[in-house]
Image (cartoon, rainbow, N blue to C red; front, side, top):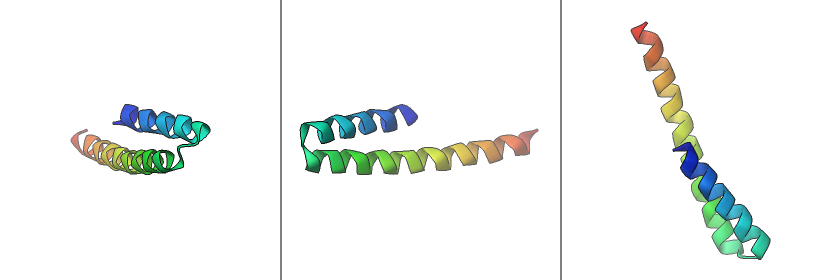
Length: 53
């Protein structure tokens, strides 16, 4: 999940440098959403892992 976030972030940065603002904005938005989903999954795994111990 985190690798997809980094991929979209790199795509957004390259698109922004080349002047594709629409594509850069869309890729950055996707990267933000994926990062938030990753954080939620990480926190759930962290909390559920502590309960088993």
